[in-house]
Length: 384
Image (cartoon, rainbow, N blue to C red; front, side, top):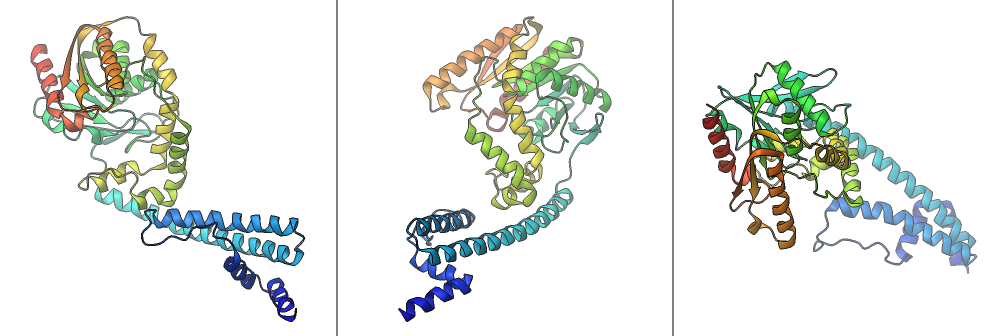
């Protein structure tokens, strides 16, 4: 009895002793990682930081129900102690993360400065990167989650033929966020203003990859006098269903809110798999506004598709539809549906042709840039 009374007094007087004692006798609700586990230490730290208070709260409930008041008070004291300690630790880590992220961004600007011009469009700047000489000028429009880097294998080859420009849409890459909605009509107008302020002269050949096809077609429809041809690279069709499940929504918001504290950069979640380009891609993509823009762009897809379905008048200029190889995909039914939608893109012009990029998946600019370059070469030859 004396030993039990002594333990009870120590538990009430010393929260640290209480926590240690409770941890010793707590069932293993929190699995302790070993060297053979596959989870990253950050994940384990998160599990422990969340699991420990929850375990203590469960114990506090149990002791309350079973009328063990002394133990219940000790557990509640321990919960307060743990929450205070974890809160202090998180604040300290957040401060270090802010410093790490800001220092890394300053280093990024020194190592990887924007290659193009940052042009002010009235409160926000858009990067436009142009190389080569000649006419017509080829304008490269990246896909849903891309940047000017998507065209790194295409632009140098086209630059040997004529002038070519890639750019980062508002919110992507080196470009600032725009207050405008992310729909094709707005982005086509934005691109028109960008080219005009940069002094780039028509005629233009527009090349749009994936969802960039919407913007290319909308630009050609709105400014027909400035466009001589359009190339759609595995372009999105208005009848496609772009799902935006809640898990993806949570992930993008998580990346957006943790980027200022350096977590995505530290874990290399935005650097891609190519070790030669990883540093550059981290500099371009590890930004909270990029993840926010990706979220908003996906959320705006139904409105964007509706705009394109309302475009009933077919273009009269040459349209080349470059499609991925159906044999590369792992889902035959899905590839069949995609191939059907690709043929449907031909209806956007009365002068259209289709080319299949053999051996390539959706990333045709990275896997078969030669197919895109050859299509542009032929268009330039026909226009001269």
